Image (tube, rainbow over all chains, first blue to last red; front, side):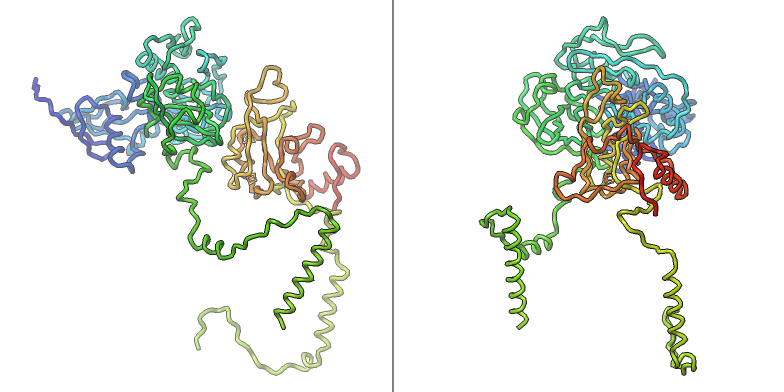
Length: 370
Length: 198
Ligand code: SF4
Ligand code: SF4
Ligand code: SF4
Ligand code: FES
């Protein structure tokens, strides 16, 4: 055995060569490509269960399947089946095909269909709509029709603690919330019960989560299964305006996104990066209790991707700037109005005044003509 | 000179014939056309007493439909508002309480639903966006002329369908519409206001 392992590994992802450290997964390598060149964003495989900040996540949903056309430089055979890119580590000389391989895209359609098998058609009611990864995934990779005709499994909605509501019907069993509870909070009180088709997220003996960071399960949930009870039906995400803000908090970093409706803060969430992942978890006090602008120091509007529906009907100040000549024209034609005149409501007086004004105007125009 | 396009007409200066010169045949011909039209059926109608059939896809005022059981279909999903190019629609959602199942079809409903008729351009995009088949633009009613500001914004009181006078688009051709109008005028369909027939 050689032990002089190379310090960087070269792989080819969709024809793009990239050098990464050993131990990187294919997904991470693809993300590095997109981070270096934002025009390659579309190359990155979709992820429904993998969550970079959560150790051990991934490998559940199969949304990220890719084709490995060459296993490594030493063993140039392709891997026999599609592999989940989020948990497959790269090897030197690996050649990976994602969007360049039609079989992968075809497979992804099937994965969407599987994820939607038991999913309700709930988007008009669901609070996640507009920032839902399942919507994105189905829109980008799925087909518009369903072939499923059987009865879908349904659950009653359930309260997990005072702030979080679980809609098990919408859950895709990505386990992200379980890992969050495991790794961020000290004591996990909810997990996946049952197996296969009967698997569901549940709290053991209905014990409420009273952990200080339990609210973060709302942010990590890619779908609308875990939602904020204080935000329930308050507004659709695309009518609210996200603003970055921070505060002094002794429990968390205090760096959040505030969601405004008019002047009112209707929701507080942690900040998500370009992969929709939260790097800095926030505490429940920040999330659920500080819903006044005065609690926060505003940093400015959150950057929202143009492709996101959240950017709809919002206009950046520099986009709606009026052209200079229009302003000048308006200024040159502006006539100050004499507002000291009395406000008249009496019909008779109005009629007399307008006759008088008419006469005056007629005389003016006559005088101009002569 | 060579012609660049074939649109220009060459002017001719030819001598007029005798018939053209005595002028009277041309006048007689012109009068004949006038008199012919004089006895023809008129193409104009006496609006507003008489109204034309506007076609099954005419886009008039909005209506928020109820389902067969009389429950409001709209679930305040906001898709119509985000589709609206004129930003005419606004709404406030509310959660359905226990015991209100006969009023609202979904778990969530629009407590407030407003259309600003001054902004609306009657493009019908809201109708197309709606996943619940809730909002429609009526093909048979306009927004009446407004004279006051507070008539401009239409709330749920004006928009939600009246179960005793439902909006049903049954006639899809002009002939069907005529047949329906005749029935209405004769009182065969009683719950809809009769409309005059041109
Ligand atoms: S979780 Fe996503 S896909 Fe499912 S109902 Fe909610 S918005 Fe729609
Ligand atoms: S008809 Fe068009 S402009 Fe009018 S409310 Fe609907 S979407 Fe908006
Ligand atoms: S009318 Fe239709 S599109 Fe508009 S909010 Fe209601 S359900 Fe949604
Ligand atoms: S993201 Fe890779 S399997 Fe779910």
